[in-house]
Length: 177
Ligand SMILES: Cc1cc2nc3c(=O)[nH]c(=O)nc-3n(C[C@H](O)[C@H](O)[C@H](O)COP(=O)(O)O)c2cc1C
Image (tube, rainbow, N blue to C red):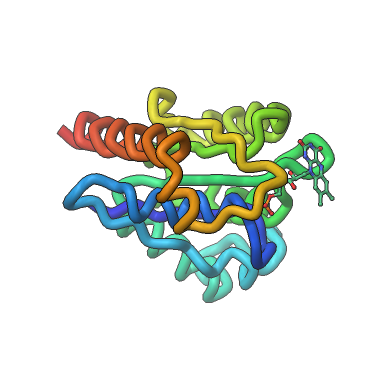
């Protein structure tokens, strides 16, 4: 089973990117989590370019989405909204045939960031994602200097993350059965 992880933060020390890398380490056997690194290289969404010849980075992202069984997304909240880079990537997927019905789980690294999470859920529902609600998780990483190693080594963080990944893999298996 393959899962793509998408972080909405471009920050080098990003907690959202760190938690996705930790999730890859804690995923059940047989589940490969690959980090999508191309989000910053996507052009701004333009419906005029959303035709049979989409820009190469968009085509590559769509191909990647088509090749995985599920998506794991973690995004910061900026000004009570979803990070622009993530929303831009999702806008490029609205018209794709790869995205609809794709299983998606969300990780939120800040308990106070409720607005972006709600907006992201609404967008994903609108895009016909299959949201794995039981596998969505909020962890209190805001303000800490976390990396994938320290998250994976802290039982209070690693255990719920491990369970969330197990639940997400089970959800994907059920959807595909
Ligand atoms: C410009 C800016 C706006 C922000 N707006 C909010 C906000 O509206 N609500 C919130 O809870 N946090 C807000 N934050 C805090 C970020 O969501 C928080 O620092 C987040 O953990 C950053 O994620 P990262 O560590 O992956 O980069 C904001 C941060 C920045 C830089």
